[in-house]
Image (cartoon, rainbow, N blue to C red):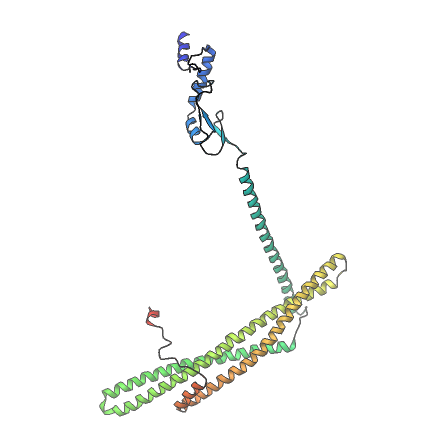
Amino acid sequence: MTDSIMNKAATMEIPINSNGDTGTLTEDDSLEQAAKLQWSLDEKDLQQVMVSGPNLNETSIVSGGYGGTAEGIIPTSSIKGPAVHYNAEFNKRIPVTGLGSNMHHSSSSSSMTAEETTRGVAVEKLETVKKWGLNTYKCTKQMISERFGRGSRTVDLELEAQIEVLRDTKRKYENVLRLARALTNHFYNMVQTQHALGDTFADLSQKSPELRDEFGYNAETQKLLCKNGETLLGAINFFVSSINTLVNKTMEDTLMTIKMYENARLEYDAYRSDLEELSMGPRDAVAMARIEAAQQQYQVQKDKYERLRSDVAIKLKFLEENKVKVMHKQLLLFHNAISAYFAGNQQQLEQTLKQFNVKLKPPGADKPSWLEEQ
Protein backbone atom coordinates (compact mmCIF):
# COMPACT_ATOMS: atom_id res chain seq x y z
CA MET A 1 0.00 0.00 0.00
CA THR A 2 2.80 2.34 0.98
CA ASP A 3 4.78 1.46 -2.21
CA SER A 4 1.73 2.10 -4.37
CA ILE A 5 1.15 5.46 -2.82
CA MET A 6 4.80 6.33 -3.25
CA ASN A 7 4.76 5.40 -6.96
CA LYS A 8 1.71 7.52 -7.56
CA ALA A 9 3.23 10.36 -5.64
CA ALA A 10 6.36 10.16 -7.81
CA THR A 11 4.34 10.85 -10.98
CA MET A 12 2.26 13.72 -9.72
CA GLU A 13 3.01 17.41 -9.80
CA ILE A 14 3.91 19.34 -6.70
CA PRO A 15 2.15 22.69 -6.92
CA ILE A 16 4.10 25.74 -5.84
CA ASN A 17 2.27 28.74 -4.50
CA SER A 18 3.31 32.34 -4.82
CA ASN A 19 5.56 32.08 -1.73
CA GLY A 20 7.33 28.94 -2.93
CA ASP A 21 5.76 26.71 -0.28
CA THR A 22 4.42 23.34 -1.14
CA GLY A 23 0.79 22.63 -0.53
CA THR A 24 -0.48 19.52 1.12
CA LEU A 25 -2.55 17.18 -1.00
CA THR A 26 -4.70 14.30 -0.02
CA GLU A 27 -4.32 10.89 -1.63
CA ASP A 28 -7.43 11.33 -3.80
CA ASP A 29 -6.32 14.71 -5.00
CA SER A 30 -2.91 13.31 -5.83
CA LEU A 31 -4.38 10.48 -7.84
CA GLU A 32 -6.66 12.88 -9.74
CA GLN A 33 -3.78 15.18 -10.57
CA ALA A 34 -1.62 12.24 -11.70
CA ALA A 35 -4.41 10.88 -13.95
CA LYS A 36 -4.95 14.25 -15.56
CA LEU A 37 -1.24 14.69 -16.22
CA GLN A 38 -0.90 11.17 -17.62
CA TRP A 39 -3.92 11.72 -19.93
CA SER A 40 -2.45 14.93 -21.27
CA LEU A 41 0.93 13.29 -21.93
CA ASP A 42 -0.68 10.40 -23.80
CA GLU A 43 -2.04 12.66 -26.54
CA LYS A 44 0.40 11.93 -29.38
CA ASP A 45 -0.29 14.89 -31.66
CA LEU A 46 -1.00 17.49 -28.96
CA GLN A 47 2.15 19.44 -29.68
CA GLN A 48 1.67 19.27 -33.45
CA VAL A 49 -1.94 20.43 -33.20
CA MET A 50 -1.00 23.26 -30.86
CA VAL A 51 1.75 24.42 -33.25
CA SER A 52 -0.07 24.11 -36.59
CA GLY A 53 -3.64 24.55 -35.45
CA PRO A 54 -4.78 27.05 -32.85
CA ASN A 55 -3.33 30.52 -32.45
CA LEU A 56 -4.73 31.75 -29.16
CA ASN A 57 -4.54 35.35 -28.11
CA GLU A 58 -2.44 34.38 -25.11
CA THR A 59 -0.84 31.24 -23.74
CA SER A 60 -0.67 30.47 -20.06
CA ILE A 61 2.32 28.58 -18.71
CA VAL A 62 1.46 27.53 -15.16
CA SER A 63 4.22 26.28 -12.96
CA GLY A 64 1.82 24.24 -10.90
CA GLY A 65 0.23 22.24 -13.78
CA TYR A 66 -3.55 21.90 -13.84
CA GLY A 67 -5.12 23.81 -11.07
CA GLY A 68 -2.05 25.98 -10.51
CA THR A 69 -2.10 29.76 -10.11
CA ALA A 70 -2.23 32.18 -13.02
CA GLU A 71 1.30 33.45 -12.51
CA GLY A 72 3.90 33.14 -15.27
CA ILE A 73 1.53 34.16 -18.10
CA ILE A 74 3.38 34.92 -21.35
CA PRO A 75 1.29 37.13 -23.72
CA THR A 76 1.30 36.04 -27.34
CA SER A 77 -1.09 38.58 -28.83
CA SER A 78 1.51 39.51 -31.45
CA ILE A 79 0.98 36.15 -33.18
CA LYS A 80 -1.28 36.66 -36.23
CA GLY A 81 -3.64 34.08 -37.67
CA PRO A 82 -7.26 33.03 -37.91
CA ALA A 83 -8.97 32.73 -34.58
CA VAL A 84 -9.97 29.20 -33.66
CA HIS A 85 -10.87 27.37 -30.45
CA TYR A 86 -9.24 24.07 -29.64
CA ASN A 87 -11.32 21.44 -27.99
CA ALA A 88 -8.87 19.05 -26.35
CA GLU A 89 -11.56 16.58 -25.47
CA PHE A 90 -12.45 15.92 -29.12
CA ASN A 91 -9.03 16.78 -30.61
CA LYS A 92 -10.31 19.16 -33.27
CA ARG A 93 -10.35 22.85 -34.08
CA ILE A 94 -13.51 24.96 -34.09
CA PRO A 95 -13.20 28.17 -36.21
CA VAL A 96 -14.72 31.38 -34.93
CA THR A 97 -17.39 32.12 -37.53
CA GLY A 98 -17.93 35.69 -36.47
CA LEU A 99 -14.70 36.82 -38.16
CA GLY A 100 -14.65 37.41 -41.91
CA SER A 101 -18.42 37.77 -42.23
CA ASN A 102 -18.02 40.94 -44.27
CA MET A 103 -15.77 39.18 -46.76
CA HIS A 104 -18.24 36.31 -47.07
CA HIS A 105 -21.08 38.77 -47.63
CA SER A 106 -19.21 40.64 -50.38
CA SER A 107 -18.18 37.43 -52.16
CA SER A 108 -21.73 36.09 -52.06
CA SER A 109 -23.04 39.40 -53.40
CA SER A 110 -20.57 39.38 -56.33
CA SER A 111 -21.40 35.76 -57.13
CA MET A 112 -25.11 36.60 -57.18
CA THR A 113 -24.46 39.50 -59.56
CA ALA A 114 -22.45 37.27 -61.92
CA GLU A 115 -25.18 34.63 -61.78
CA GLU A 116 -27.85 37.20 -62.65
CA THR A 117 -25.77 38.47 -65.60
CA THR A 118 -25.26 34.95 -66.92
CA ARG A 119 -28.95 34.21 -66.55
CA GLY A 120 -29.84 37.38 -68.46
CA VAL A 121 -27.55 36.46 -71.37
CA ALA A 122 -29.00 32.95 -71.47
CA VAL A 123 -32.56 34.30 -71.55
CA GLU A 124 -31.66 36.68 -74.37
CA LYS A 125 -30.11 33.88 -76.42
CA LEU A 126 -33.14 31.72 -75.78
CA GLU A 127 -35.45 34.45 -77.06
CA THR A 128 -33.29 34.87 -80.19
CA VAL A 129 -33.39 31.14 -80.91
CA LYS A 130 -37.14 31.11 -80.29
CA LYS A 131 -37.75 33.93 -82.79
CA TRP A 132 -35.46 32.31 -85.35
CA GLY A 133 -37.23 28.97 -85.00
CA LEU A 134 -40.67 30.55 -85.36
CA ASN A 135 -39.59 32.53 -88.43
CA THR A 136 -38.00 29.44 -90.02
CA TYR A 137 -41.14 27.42 -89.41
CA LYS A 138 -43.37 30.03 -91.05
CA CYS A 139 -41.06 30.44 -94.06
CA THR A 140 -40.76 26.69 -94.55
CA LYS A 141 -44.51 26.32 -94.37
CA GLN A 142 -44.96 29.08 -96.95
CA MET A 143 -42.34 27.60 -99.28
CA ILE A 144 -43.95 24.15 -99.18
CA SER A 145 -47.39 25.67 -99.77
CA GLU A 146 -46.09 27.55 -102.83
CA ARG A 147 -44.37 24.45 -104.19
CA PHE A 148 -47.53 22.38 -103.98
CA GLY A 149 -49.72 25.19 -105.28
CA ARG A 150 -51.68 25.71 -102.07
CA GLY A 151 -50.32 29.11 -101.08
CA SER A 152 -50.26 32.46 -102.84
CA ARG A 153 -47.04 34.37 -103.56
CA THR A 154 -46.35 38.01 -104.29
CA VAL A 155 -45.01 38.54 -107.82
CA ASP A 156 -43.57 41.65 -109.46
CA LEU A 157 -43.74 40.65 -113.12
CA GLU A 158 -41.50 43.41 -114.45
CA LEU A 159 -38.82 42.89 -111.81
CA GLU A 160 -38.95 39.11 -112.14
CA ALA A 161 -38.40 39.40 -115.91
CA GLN A 162 -35.35 41.63 -115.38
CA ILE A 163 -33.92 39.19 -112.85
CA GLU A 164 -34.35 36.28 -115.25
CA VAL A 165 -32.62 38.26 -118.03
CA LEU A 166 -29.72 39.01 -115.72
CA ARG A 167 -29.26 35.35 -114.81
CA ASP A 168 -29.33 34.33 -118.48
CA THR A 169 -26.84 37.09 -119.34
CA LYS A 170 -24.52 35.96 -116.58
CA ARG A 171 -24.54 32.38 -117.89
CA LYS A 172 -23.66 33.57 -121.41
CA TYR A 173 -20.92 35.90 -120.19
CA GLU A 174 -19.44 33.07 -118.15
CA ASN A 175 -19.21 31.05 -121.37
CA VAL A 176 -17.47 33.98 -123.13
CA LEU A 177 -15.05 34.21 -120.23
CA ARG A 178 -14.29 30.49 -120.39
CA LEU A 179 -13.61 30.61 -124.13
CA ALA A 180 -11.47 33.75 -123.84
CA ARG A 181 -9.33 32.08 -121.19
CA ALA A 182 -8.92 29.02 -123.41
CA LEU A 183 -7.86 31.28 -126.31
CA THR A 184 -5.33 32.98 -124.04
CA ASN A 185 -3.80 29.66 -122.99
CA HIS A 186 -3.56 28.37 -126.57
CA PHE A 187 -2.14 31.61 -127.91
CA TYR A 188 0.39 31.78 -125.07
CA ASN A 189 1.61 28.30 -125.97
CA MET A 190 1.89 29.33 -129.63
CA VAL A 191 3.96 32.40 -128.73
CA GLN A 192 6.28 30.29 -126.61
CA THR A 193 6.67 27.86 -129.50
CA GLN A 194 7.50 30.71 -131.88
CA HIS A 195 10.05 32.04 -129.43
CA ALA A 196 11.76 28.64 -129.18
CA LEU A 197 11.63 28.19 -132.96
CA GLY A 198 13.24 31.60 -133.53
CA ASP A 199 16.07 30.75 -131.14
CA THR A 200 16.63 27.45 -132.96
CA PHE A 201 16.76 29.18 -136.36
CA ALA A 202 19.23 31.73 -135.05
CA ASP A 203 21.48 29.00 -133.66
CA LEU A 204 21.38 27.06 -136.93
CA SER A 205 22.23 30.18 -138.92
CA GLN A 206 25.48 30.40 -136.96
CA LYS A 207 26.32 26.70 -137.40
CA SER A 208 25.26 26.31 -141.06
CA PRO A 209 27.20 28.76 -143.26
CA GLU A 210 25.58 27.52 -146.44
CA LEU A 211 22.05 28.26 -145.02
CA ARG A 212 22.91 31.24 -142.88
CA ASP A 213 20.69 33.70 -144.75
CA GLU A 214 17.66 31.41 -144.91
CA PHE A 215 17.84 30.52 -141.23
CA GLY A 216 18.41 34.17 -140.41
CA TYR A 217 15.28 35.33 -142.25
CA ASN A 218 13.13 32.79 -140.51
CA ALA A 219 14.64 33.62 -137.12
CA GLU A 220 13.81 37.31 -137.56
CA THR A 221 10.27 36.49 -138.70
CA GLN A 222 9.60 34.27 -135.69
CA LYS A 223 10.98 36.89 -133.31
CA LEU A 224 8.72 39.53 -134.86
CA LEU A 225 5.70 37.23 -134.60
CA CYS A 226 6.62 36.46 -131.00
CA LYS A 227 6.82 40.17 -130.17
CA ASN A 228 3.47 40.90 -131.79
CA GLY A 229 1.99 37.83 -130.10
CA GLU A 230 3.06 39.12 -126.67
CA THR A 231 1.41 42.44 -127.48
CA LEU A 232 -1.80 40.69 -128.48
CA LEU A 233 -1.63 38.57 -125.32
CA GLY A 234 -1.60 41.78 -123.29
CA ALA A 235 -4.79 42.94 -125.00
CA ILE A 236 -6.51 39.57 -124.55
CA ASN A 237 -5.52 39.39 -120.87
CA PHE A 238 -6.98 42.86 -120.33
CA PHE A 239 -10.19 41.72 -122.02
CA VAL A 240 -10.40 38.59 -119.85
CA SER A 241 -9.72 40.56 -116.66
CA SER A 242 -12.49 43.07 -117.42
CA ILE A 243 -15.02 40.36 -118.26
CA ASN A 244 -14.10 38.49 -115.08
CA THR A 245 -14.70 41.62 -112.97
CA LEU A 246 -18.04 42.23 -114.63
CA VAL A 247 -19.26 38.65 -114.22
CA ASN A 248 -17.84 37.56 -110.87
CA LYS A 249 -18.01 40.85 -108.97
CA THR A 250 -20.53 43.30 -110.42
CA MET A 251 -23.16 40.79 -111.51
CA GLU A 252 -22.55 38.60 -108.47
CA ASP A 253 -23.11 41.55 -106.13
CA THR A 254 -26.44 42.28 -107.80
CA LEU A 255 -27.45 38.61 -107.57
CA MET A 256 -26.67 38.60 -103.85
CA THR A 257 -29.05 41.53 -103.39
CA ILE A 258 -31.63 39.63 -105.45
CA LYS A 259 -31.23 36.62 -103.15
CA MET A 260 -31.86 38.81 -100.11
CA TYR A 261 -34.91 40.25 -101.89
CA GLU A 262 -36.29 36.77 -102.59
CA ASN A 263 -35.83 35.75 -98.94
CA ALA A 264 -37.60 38.93 -97.83
CA ARG A 265 -40.43 38.18 -100.27
CA LEU A 266 -40.83 34.68 -98.78
CA GLU A 267 -40.91 36.07 -95.22
CA TYR A 268 -43.38 38.75 -96.26
CA ASP A 269 -45.74 36.18 -97.80
CA ALA A 270 -45.37 33.89 -94.77
CA TYR A 271 -46.41 36.63 -92.32
CA ARG A 272 -49.11 37.82 -94.70
CA SER A 273 -50.62 34.33 -94.83
CA ASP A 274 -50.39 34.05 -91.05
CA LEU A 275 -52.25 37.36 -90.65
CA GLU A 276 -54.94 36.27 -93.09
CA GLU A 277 -55.50 33.01 -91.20
CA LEU A 278 -55.81 34.85 -87.89
CA SER A 279 -58.20 37.40 -89.40
CA MET A 280 -60.58 34.64 -90.47
CA GLY A 281 -60.68 33.15 -86.96
CA PRO A 282 -62.64 34.20 -83.85
CA ARG A 283 -62.55 37.75 -82.51
CA ASP A 284 -62.16 37.25 -78.78
CA ALA A 285 -59.63 39.14 -76.62
CA VAL A 286 -56.84 36.59 -77.05
CA ALA A 287 -57.36 36.42 -80.82
CA MET A 288 -57.37 40.20 -81.13
CA ALA A 289 -54.03 40.38 -79.27
CA ARG A 290 -52.57 37.81 -81.65
CA ILE A 291 -53.93 39.67 -84.66
CA GLU A 292 -52.39 42.92 -83.45
CA ALA A 293 -48.98 41.26 -82.94
CA ALA A 294 -49.22 39.60 -86.37
CA GLN A 295 -50.13 42.96 -87.92
CA GLN A 296 -47.00 44.54 -86.48
CA GLN A 297 -44.77 41.72 -87.72
CA TYR A 298 -46.44 41.85 -91.12
CA GLN A 299 -45.74 45.58 -91.39
CA VAL A 300 -42.07 45.05 -90.50
CA GLN A 301 -41.69 42.37 -93.18
CA LYS A 302 -43.56 44.48 -95.72
CA ASP A 303 -41.21 47.44 -95.19
CA LYS A 304 -38.20 45.16 -95.53
CA TYR A 305 -39.57 43.60 -98.71
CA GLU A 306 -40.33 46.95 -100.35
CA ARG A 307 -36.92 48.35 -99.42
CA LEU A 308 -35.08 45.39 -100.95
CA ARG A 309 -37.28 45.46 -104.04
CA SER A 310 -36.31 49.10 -104.56
CA ASP A 311 -32.61 48.22 -104.06
CA VAL A 312 -32.82 45.45 -106.65
CA ALA A 313 -34.47 47.72 -109.21
CA ILE A 314 -31.78 50.38 -108.75
CA LYS A 315 -28.92 47.87 -108.96
CA LEU A 316 -30.34 46.28 -112.10
CA LYS A 317 -30.52 49.68 -113.74
CA PHE A 318 -26.94 50.61 -112.86
CA LEU A 319 -25.69 47.15 -113.81
CA GLU A 320 -27.19 47.45 -117.28
CA GLU A 321 -25.57 50.84 -117.84
CA ASN A 322 -22.21 49.64 -116.54
CA LYS A 323 -22.38 46.46 -118.62
CA VAL A 324 -22.99 48.37 -121.86
CA LYS A 325 -20.15 50.79 -121.13
CA VAL A 326 -17.64 48.08 -120.20
CA MET A 327 -18.50 45.71 -123.04
CA HIS A 328 -18.43 48.49 -125.64
CA LYS A 329 -14.85 49.30 -124.70
CA GLN A 330 -13.68 45.70 -124.35
CA LEU A 331 -15.24 44.45 -127.59
CA LEU A 332 -13.69 47.33 -129.53
CA LEU A 333 -10.29 46.57 -128.01
CA PHE A 334 -10.59 42.87 -128.80
CA HIS A 335 -11.60 43.51 -132.40
CA ASN A 336 -8.89 46.06 -133.15
CA ALA A 337 -6.12 44.03 -131.51
CA ILE A 338 -7.02 40.79 -133.30
CA SER A 339 -7.37 42.55 -136.68
CA ALA A 340 -4.04 44.38 -136.36
CA TYR A 341 -2.19 41.23 -135.30
CA PHE A 342 -3.38 39.00 -138.13
CA ALA A 343 -2.91 41.85 -140.66
CA GLY A 344 0.71 42.08 -139.53
CA ASN A 345 0.27 45.76 -138.66
CA GLN A 346 2.56 46.16 -135.69
CA GLN A 347 2.07 49.92 -135.42
CA GLN A 348 -1.73 49.59 -135.40
CA LEU A 349 -1.51 46.90 -132.73
CA GLU A 350 0.63 49.06 -130.47
CA GLN A 351 -1.61 52.05 -131.09
CA THR A 352 -4.65 50.03 -130.06
CA LEU A 353 -3.07 49.20 -126.71
CA LYS A 354 -2.17 52.85 -126.11
CA GLN A 355 -5.71 53.90 -127.00
CA PHE A 356 -7.21 51.67 -124.31
CA ASN A 357 -4.45 52.27 -121.75
CA VAL A 358 -3.29 48.67 -121.75
CA LYS A 359 0.14 48.27 -120.15
CA LEU A 360 2.17 45.24 -121.11
CA LYS A 361 3.93 43.26 -118.45
CA PRO A 362 7.63 42.67 -118.99
CA PRO A 363 8.62 39.12 -120.07
CA GLY A 364 8.77 36.77 -117.12
CA ALA A 365 6.69 39.02 -114.85
CA ASP A 366 4.16 36.25 -114.23
CA LYS A 367 6.87 33.78 -113.21
CA PRO A 368 7.60 33.47 -109.47
CA SER A 369 10.94 34.70 -108.20
CA TRP A 370 13.64 32.29 -107.14
CA LEU A 371 12.83 33.03 -103.51
CA GLU A 372 9.17 32.02 -104.03
CA GLU A 373 10.25 28.80 -105.72
CA GLN A 374 12.28 27.71 -102.68
